[in-house]
Amino acid sequence: MKKLVVFTGAGMSAESGLGTFRGAGGLWEGYKIEEVATPQAWRTNPRLVLEFYNIRRKQCIAAQPNAAHYFLKELETSYDVRIITQNIDDLHERAGSRNVLHLHGEIRKAQSSLNPRFVYGMRSDEINIGDTCELGSQLRPHVVWFGEAVPNLEKAIAITKEADIFVVIGTSLQVYPAASLLHEVNDDCKVYVIDPHADQLSVPEGIVKIAESATTGIHKLHELLAK
Image 1 (cartoon, one colour):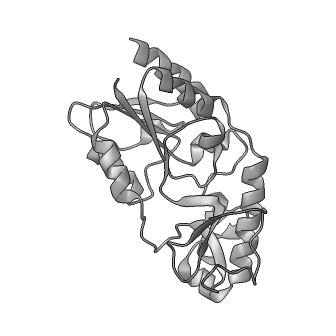
Image 2 (cartoon, rainbow, N blue to C red; image 1 turned 90 degrees about the vertical axis):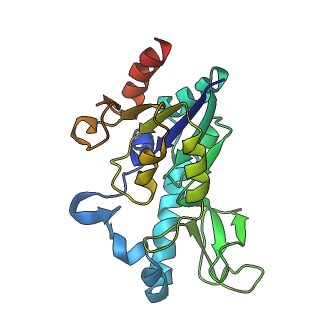
């Protein structure tokens, strides 16, 4: 069974109602990114950071997987599917995908602000000041902020190198180091990029570009894979 690796970004979840990372004026849901998504922001105003992610978490819980999420689950009947996602929502898992690696963390988990190896599933939809881990330190969102290392990057590279087919969906390939995965595929790997702005992306020659949203582009991918 061929190994099909899918690398997804914010555009994958956009059609489920979740906003893409960068909006107008560099804002994310009305917040300045540097004020809510950096270690400095956490040190300066942890209450604001928690407020921001509590809002995002509730949005993610309310959202539902879309047709593209379900299509990737269906591909498991024909391929050995591995999903690498930049998204912090759990829509892939809720659609039934069994092998999902989160590069930037999972919003429905919390971690110790003292030791990131202490990670917890959340029983509520909020983390508040005073919520602590077993070490006694304040809990923070289990997300990778700008300026932090990407713990799962080496795993993602190893998965990518094994791909017979590599599909990029809903990412502008601008966020590094995650975007570098495209350059880790083997020479004989077939690569597809699905994004509304795919025609404008600077990618290596030979890559098939599908300039569509996730849910419509996935149908074209299905046709191409069937050939």
